[in-house]
Image (tube, rainbow over all chains, first blue to last red):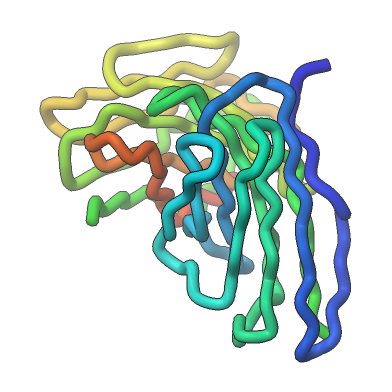
Length: 111
Length: 110
């Protein structure tokens, strides 16, 4: 089946730790995105990548890092510099400027 | 950056009722999408509709790009329609990213 997978579904982090969220797609999409959602809010863009080995900061990139070594994969690292990382993280992909499709999300909680 | 406003913020309906959700945006766009976020957080694509009108079963959407708004119509609502509906637009440029509205929380009571 074609689609976007994210893992893990739930993640717990101690303060001061870095954690990496996985996002994989088999849709052959060029572009991939990471969004953050806080309770009762819309989604905000963290990072996006239009092509392999290239990515750009979104609106709230501080405290996060990404890589895009393969077309299918776009992992997000939440670093210890992110002051309030507890949130719901959603990955998406698209062909160019066209319709974006989303994965099921990862809920990150800082203990 | 582009601004996206959705109204109403909350809407409560009885099963079987019809509703209209609105999305206003502040600039021209290449991409406009409507999503339904289910109770598990999954964003389900409803429409990709930068202009014109589309229908899918009980749902339909219209975007009037020249007047910078889009409408989502839900007819004969069901309890499974409950959830948050988001409108998202790009900025009309070449960088693909979407800006989301804050959503409309729809509750359909039996």
